[in-house]
Length: 292
Image (tube, rainbow, N blue to C red; front, side, top):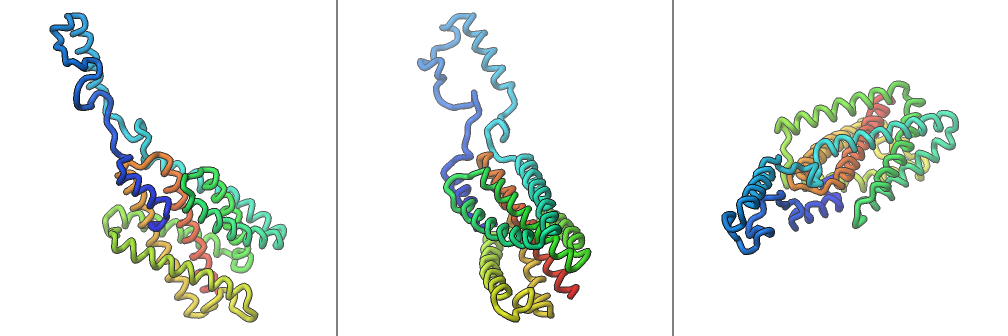
């Protein structure tokens, strides 16, 4: 998300000049091999032709690209996103099977995965240095959580998982096309508004979860239940998660444009996966409410 402290640190690094680099052989100033600026004629014909050939070979080399300079590329983000997504799907299958065979263990995976991802998410966001093992661990816990939740929803409302998965994929593609075509423009004002809405909804979601879990007689979905108000809340949440994808796409473009270090591709992939899973969960809740 746009408010991710780790990405804010990325922007600070960009302002401090991490993106600045010079290509070999194109530095200005005196030649370190010839500090006295002695002419080629004075150095002798052999040195002259040798130096000229080295200089020509140097300038004939292609300019250093992001890969050679250790910067984030779109390929990096795509490959790491696919890798994390594969972990979510793989451990999601494990969570599904466990929940199907033992509802008690499934509930433990549900609660443990939810709490674990919350804690790890905060650690990843506020840790001073990026930790790939923590990001991978987050994907594992997220997969177990998603698998257990999906199995419970599918058991209660058959077909809802496939519908939510298709809706998530379609929304992702639609938002990507809208962002790339310029239909959705991510400005500073847009980013601030969406970020504040995300924080507000996060607080509401925590309160709603506690209300649904611990208050006797509370509706299964919390505030609004499965009535019109509950459906409206889910529609709002789906819309907010969808718009958050545009922030993630913009975050990736900005990281590439500012020459962010390659390690940040893990953070970008992590943020994208988190938003996609959030969108999927909100679709699950929406379609379940509509089925009721």
